[in-house]
Length: 158
Image (cartoon, rainbow, N blue to C red; front, top):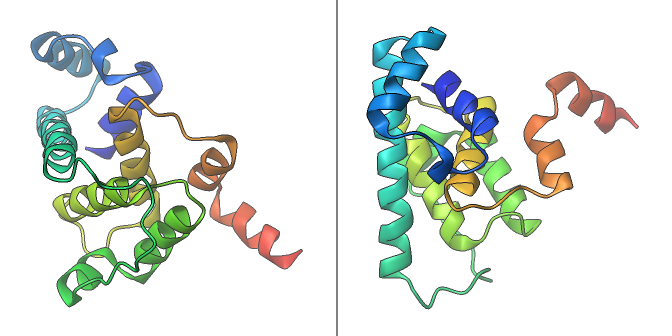
């Protein structure tokens, strides 16, 4: 599923640039993606679109950045893992994600069905949430999202 999501992110500059679902399925199949993988990815994207609308409809007055602290329930903590929660908190504290985007990222990460979710996959989820909202990550965020573990370790040593 994540390979399909990355392909869509790299190929289409925004979601409305994607072909209609039937044509997209044919194109993805022709490229070599498996039917299950395509189906999962498109279902996940449909749910992402619904989450964007649901959160926007339910919380229209939500400020861009809240000053409260997000408390994770034990089930979220178990499913996301310490590394993912730390990364989400980093992105929010650096003002790269607002409170609503954070909640959508968490909801979509929980829907991925992997516990705990890998940091690599969480980064794809963050990109897809921003992509679905027509927002591009700034340079710093892009570096954080695509920084290799080796690069991160060497950066910490300096």
